[in-house]
Image 1: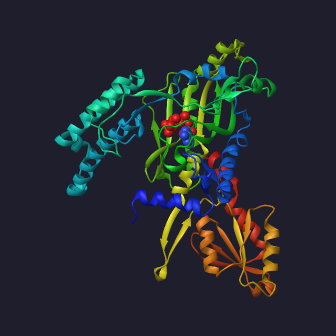
Image 2 (image 1 turned 30 degrees about the horizontal axis):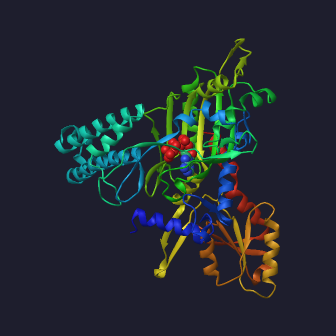
Image 3 (image 1 turned 90 degrees about the vertical axis):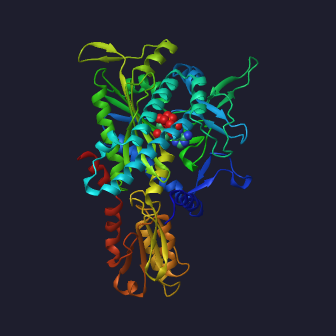
Length: 516
Ligand code: ATP
């Protein structure tokens, strides 16, 4: 059995080998934490985006989209708090010269203690079998109680330090916990410093000098500054939402784990404007809707969980993450936040404009509250690949690598192949491809044995392979082969369209979302 780390390495290698994700500027040795999507990756990514976009704007009459610019007026980032507070606390190890996020080092320490507790519990469960009572064990076992007390104290200390952004205290925690650098193994740490994550550049070149502008670190602010425009021109009534997909940039200190943490990435964000006082109901509503959206893809319900935030940002009154079980643990893929009226009020204050909603029902004006759903396209992409990648042992000692992608997201829906490269079979195969290509992304492959061609399609997650043989020419039937079961059926050419449509129709997922 491959370890989780080996599996992850294989997935990264697979992404490159099969045209999903390449390191950026690879011929120049790449650029750290920046990646390009290849011919299959871009199809998968576009399908993810379409699934999200349509689930927002088609299924909800009261959600509309926008596409705001990446550059925004610099005061936007003053108002949003990003200039002053979009910082990570960083610390360097003097021996390895490696830089870490202090908060991440401490969180890893917390996870280690949790692991220790879990190990004790697993051991005891094995020993006691069915008679095992976990609650009782937790409250009586001395070792577990010691670990738990340590965990609680450290947790408290850590959240106090983070809430106050007390950098000296963060350093002290690292010292007291005897946390070592994973590379050098030493405790030779620098002080903790703040590091702003926004990229900046200069715009224009006038005699007075150029203006410093930022590359947006999130797409949300493009929505807030367009709230009035959309509300007025769209005559939108509360509650309503504005959705946006677009690039965001963060100068991440610790950029590891492939496309999980990138410096240039893409977000899909929706801000839902509501009447103050209704936010906790709407928060719950969006939490559940978003979880259904993930689960509808069928990668396994147990791979998702909520992680409610204990430490809330100063403007939020509820926040949760949807986490996915990656090979390196449960990790945040999406955040759902109740942001109160913080952003709109800030923009009203800094711009001097009145940013409110006139409620015709109560004849009053107020600043709407906001529920935000914010998901990274790239992290979603990674979660799908991790959930879909599998190696299967076949009869005869062979193995195959399959991407069990949800068919609706698969880059290629069907590959058409002539059994041999003669006797008019290639022409017939092309004819079939022509029948399908207006509705589905298809490919054609005539090289190598059929078995090899099947493997190539398995590796990119193509749900259907269609083989044209000599009988096809006389009886109009083909062999269709299913990716997951590897079973084969003989079907009429005329039925192909409907078979593929049924399996790859996004409407099926949408119905699941709406009928829950
Ligand atoms: P993290 O704690 O992992 O840095 P975050 O809480 O700062 O993430 P948000 O600001 O809530 O993230 O951003 C919303 C979503 O955008 C995240 O759930 C994630 O999917 C995505 N995202 C954020 N930063 C990155 C990044 N550097 N690379 C890829 N995706 C990202």
